[in-house]
Image 1 (spheres, rainbow, N blue to C red):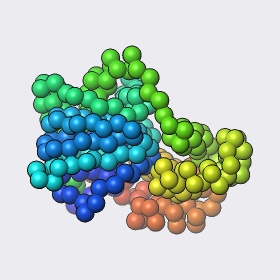
Image 2: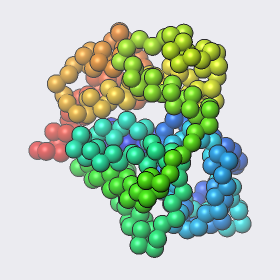
Image 3: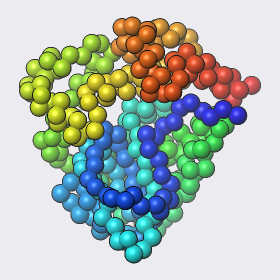
Length: 287
C-alpha cells in the first residue's frame, strides 16, 4: 500500500532517546512543539534557561535560537516536531475559527508546566499522533490531523491565561525575519524581487539576505519556493479540479517547467504524479 503523500510535520521524533554527537543552538521558520518525557535537561531558549521536569511542554515559533543542555548520565527522552503554520489550512475555515495557532503567534515561545491531568491528556494525544503518523492508510491520515488539532486546542487551553495577561517581545533579528515572512506570505503568488522587498521593508538588501539565512537556515528564495510548493500540495489535496498548470500559476510560478522542476526536487515526484496519487488515495478512502 502506498504512503499518503502529505506529511504535516517538517520533522518528527516521538519518545526519542538518541543523542546527536553535538548539541548546538539552531533556529528555523517552522513552529515547534517540544514535550519532555524524562531525564535531566535545561532548555536554552533565547536568553532563557528553563530547568525541565517530566511533563513540561514548550511551544516555539522556531526563529528564536534554542538548544537543550542535557545531562548525558541519564536517559534523555523527548517528543518534538515542527510544522509550517500555513498547513493548518487543511483543517478548513470552521475549525480555524478558534485560532488554534494563537499561542504560537502571541506568546511566540512559551514554557508550560502541565498538571498531572493535563500531562496524561497530552501524552495520550502524542501517542495517538504517533499511532497514525507512519500509517499507510489515508483514513489514518485524517485521524492524525484530528489528533494534531486536538493537541493545538490543548495548548490553547493551557495558554489561555497567559495570552490574556502576557505580551511576548521579539528580538530585532526575529522581528526583521517575521516581517520578511509576512511580506512573502502576502505576495508569494506574484513575482518577488529582493531589491523591491528590501526597499519596502526599509532594509539593506545584503543585510536582509544575511539575517534571513542566519535565522531560518534558508535563503529567501529557498523559503519562497518551499512556500509555493506547499501551497500547491494543499491545492491538490483540497481539490482535483485544477490542472497542474493552473496550480502552478496560482502559487506564483510563471513557467510549468520551473514549477515541475522545483516541485520534484522538494517532493520527490512531479506535480502530475503527486496529483494522481492524491486522487487515487482519496478515491480509495471513500470507496
